[in-house]
Image (cartoon, one colour):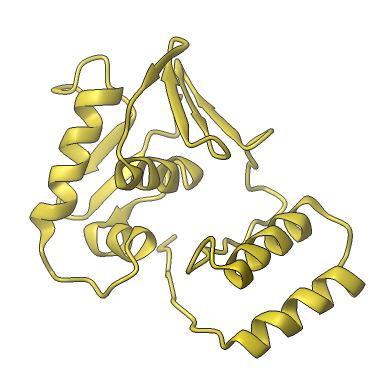
Length: 165
């Protein structure tokens, strides 16, 4: 299934309205709390954008905001990555790319889709930018970067995070 990623600009009045509605009348679910926290981050300027993802009943949800894939653990709240319990130092964009791909394990994304999901500005049609980030990520997280087991290249299309781990 092709993933469409859209950007919606929200005015402060609409953000305030959403915040009130979520606080008062939304179902009591983990997603509600995450969205409420995200909207509060928008309101206080901690973040300038949110990424929302639809999860149906069959979509695996990371427990405790940590994604475990083989020896690799990705901790969303602390933005920490470990392999075999050894911390791996990533730049903020490297973490964002890794987290995006891991959250969508098994789905193939074009370089443009990855760019749109992680960067705030418009896509510049420069494939080498994403390729460079993927190469750096592989050097840091893969046991053997020349034969990757986490971030896989889908030739002619883009990349996916291995869903077999």
